[in-house]
Image (tube, rainbow, N blue to C red; front, side, top):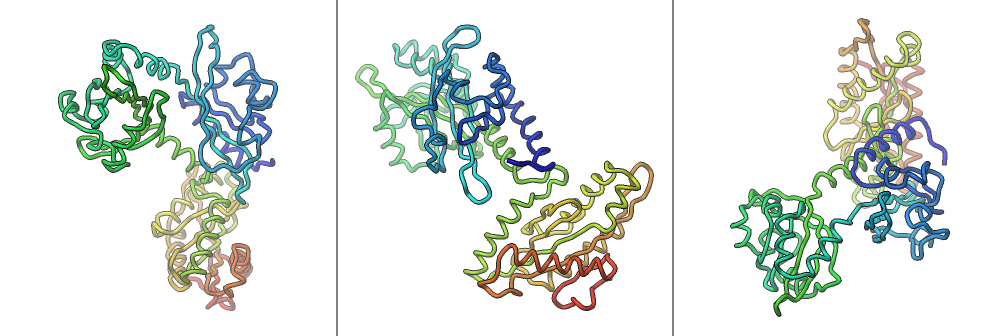
Length: 431
């Protein structure tokens, strides 16, 4: 797989982010070969360093052959996470339990190309679950001392036992928690469904994610390990709860970084092209018109040659910020490549898009950039194309970009600092 400079910079950023997470992350291809491993993994498996290039099943499971049923090894398409739990000896010789969650990695065309493995130490959680099968007094001691939120419920969904951490998670006092039922905080299921789940959970337990509503009305993401047991002839459900709101936010940020240009924070080409595909499909259904504008900074090479590449990077970031400030929130800004950017304007025609580009040109001309005590004046050229210009069965991402690109070159060849659109191909528009 060939990576360009932008992909490599993004990969470096992702590597830094993964190294800050207190869990393990592996990126593997379809053969199970490790392509990336974070610091947590290297700390847990120092004898395997370097991990990159080795097979994940050799490192994680000490196996010579792929794990049975691994979705990557079978080549089966999978959209949801696959979860497995395994036991190993720690570096200090202790037994520890690890949970591996496997997420599919897909190429832009939807092909499965590998997987991201999220490895989490659940040793403490497993020990907690085992201890919950002991006598009730032992459970109560564990409930009070656990660093995770723990709640014990009866068959009717009422709280039998809870710890201070769980009351803190929900924002109630511990006394108030004892007056609650599960439907007072769980918002993902109706009361009848929650009672059915309580009735069905057994000693084998369950592991899932859900959302809880706090006393102040705010929502948190919660990861729950639960199991049911008979205590004194009464069925009780034990839940170990962990607030994963910050982790979910970090995962969302990682996903966002994967579709962003690391220098300008504009969307990357792959994401922009995918969104244009979606808009074409919507246009075919509803005729919701949209426009594509390709913008190119004028004489950018001269800026690099005169002021240096660091200045060039600052110019690109400054230019992207001006464009973002002039766009509607519903429009998309992407980095097309080099000094070229692309704007996708939703639910709008060419006249409105041309007016927006004209405002941007005026703004860019007025806002020179200062670098190392010297002024850098900027202008750009632009080509605009609208979805309504092409015959429906000929409309595609490539065809639309081809029209906009031709008009961009027309703008540059006729003097730069102007835009070309269908109404002004022969006489480029300029303020």
